Image (cartoon, rainbow, N blue to C red):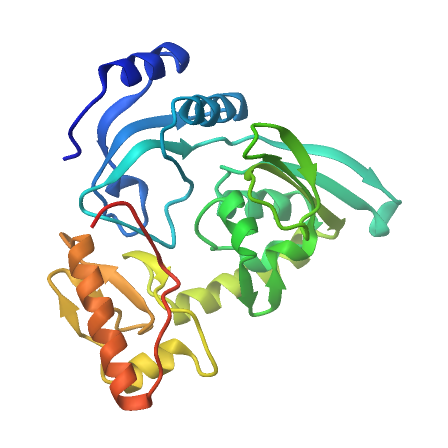
Length: 303
């Protein structure tokens, strides 16, 4: 557990954030890997206004601020995260306008950065709006998918392909609208997508085909953070598999039998188990192929 609490800090946090700050909140339950120690201070932001307020308060108190979205692609250390962890649970989706007519119409839809990506994809498909249907089954939040520019290959599509504009909170606490292509250090608050009219039937066909392929090639119904290593000239999963790593494990952290680039938590795995397994995988691949695998999973907090 993280100790050395500052009474004045927690009092200020509670006063400015509606007495909804929790101390020593275990973070594993908020991640897809189901691993992670406690947050020193934890706040669940349900609206964009609350999200902005929490970030500004944390910054004003000189606390480290960590934004926790859908909890994918991260490994939180067993000793947790110091400072203020803000869970982004914002969930608003709204139509912002349209241009053109009939089948050529372009529709602008805004989604809060905390919206569950899979939920948003389903919304667009049901509305007959094309551009995200191939991403059905993508875990995580809208903000995470946009910041990573998530890609899918069957059919090929990047989330960023249909981003029109992003609303951010800058390091100076200003709210700005910026184009997707502009590199920014700001925190994403919401995203406007530029989608095209289509039919629900056509979109559901693409969406269902995409998720069927995802289910065939990726582990399902397990606790995983997604791909562990970045792909290089050859698929990292191919290298890991052919290095004989499938079935390798440390504690309850296992290399997936379905896709070798996935590490799954079979019950009580710790962050230390996952780190040790990552090191073993990297060592075997380096030994057999001379390739040093680079982690895609992001380590956060204290290990």
